[in-house]
Image 1 (tube, rainbow, N blue to C red):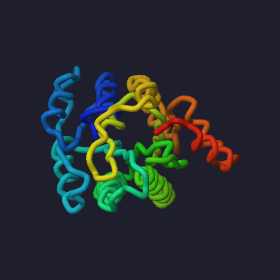
Image 2: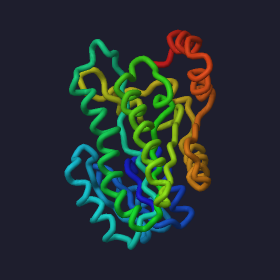
Image 3: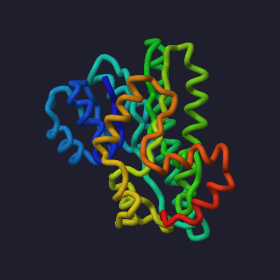
Amino acid sequence: MVWITGASSGIGEAITYALDNKNCKLIISSRDVATLNKVRDNCIHKNNIRVLPMDLSEFDKMDQVVNEAYTFFDKIDILINNAGVSQRSLIVYTEFDVYKKLMDINYLGTLALTKALLPHFIKNKKGHFVTVTSIMGKFGSPYRSGYCGAKHALHGFFDVLRMEHEKDGIDVTLICPGFVQTNVAKNALTADGSKQVKDDDATQNGLPVSIFSRKMIRAIEHKKFEAYIGRGELKGIYMKRFFPKLLHKLVLRSQVR
């Protein structure tokens, strides 16, 4: 049984369809109940899918949400932490509340849900946390400071969770997308917290979400520690490690915004 957050669009929606094709039992979550119902209706095995609305910024409700999830099925094998929001604004102009929202949703909300589910995984001596971060969790890029910060934080937290709970039969996989053809740019927060609305070339020319979802499922099945999924932009991960100054210059010269 797989629980997917951020399932109403983009990567989460694509993963829902891909796992439905494998006849998996699913719980799909986001804030948008109407859209979640449409996603479920688009699936082949509708009877295997339950809709569970939730808001990651409501930290104190996560125990309640997890308890509700367990009323649908007798177990949860995998949690896919996919929900999140991006950013497109320069640091000097970005309001502090925007940074707080990025951390609340992308980091603290994911942490709160994971913490609420963790005791159940420990009790069962089995469980798999799959968290969608970004290549921006491995190196930075202008206009994405808060988003990068939150994604870097996810890597730190889940690396430690893996170390502390390997003994309990718990696996952790970090999925690091490059550019993928979703609405992530349109929904990205700008300096005042409003949505960017418009798309960008890098996202439009990114990996098709159907191809991404197949690669992501393979990484989950192989229980990889980390999986980098994208195109040429993935080179930045290795350049950050071995040639950080060169990467700095290349990113500044790029037209990615």
